Length: 173
Image (cartoon, rainbow, N blue to C red):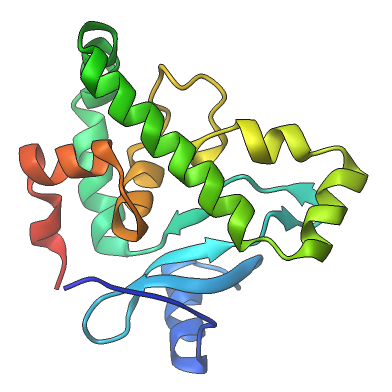
């Protein structure tokens, strides 16, 4: 069961996140999704981390999901998905809508101060034109992990496809 939370991580969650990442976390604004026991699955990240743009709004932190999705990537699924994007206009439109939704969510989560900093540093185009995981070409798929993180927090056609074709959702507790 996935619970969308968008709450600051508590001490227990911070300890789990550090274990999941193998380091102290940086740039976390909220835990965006957890399992039924409150274990973080997806983190919502700050738009600026260490003075640089960080266009990845949703970061998949679940060890189980990361391993499962890496297994799927390893069999060449990304190339097949990109071929499908070229051949199926409806699928491409749904994919591009996923990007538009991601960009809108990223911008809506920013405070006015963060938006001003984005503008001051010259990163508005990065934050308003780059899609899921910061990808600039919305006809390509860069990373299934970022797609699935978005799927757990919003509407994402690639994440839906992964659940339908590879039953990734079975890995969720």
